[in-house]
Image (cartoon, rainbow, N blue to C red; front, side):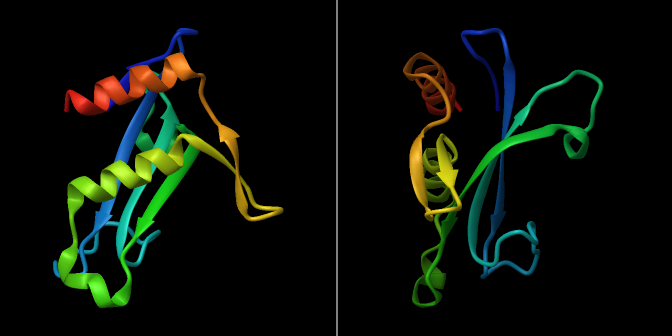
Length: 112
């Protein structure tokens, strides 16, 4: 999903799922669940060459493996990716984007 923010910056939002009931492992970054990665979009570059701005993860508990829900995982992981995480104290310290930019992101997400 591509979104152009109010300052003209274009971001690319990608989701990677790992369904424990599927034989295909799609992301080695995540054992069970969904990861949302927000990249700074640059023309002519492959996804693995783009600058990673932030990511968010949603996890499945071992007891909930049969309840894998791709849509819910995307929603939760995107919510978490929009926050700035502080590893020093282990919590979220604020939003990564302005309110206007978050609205643009959520509008694009809702139109998927």
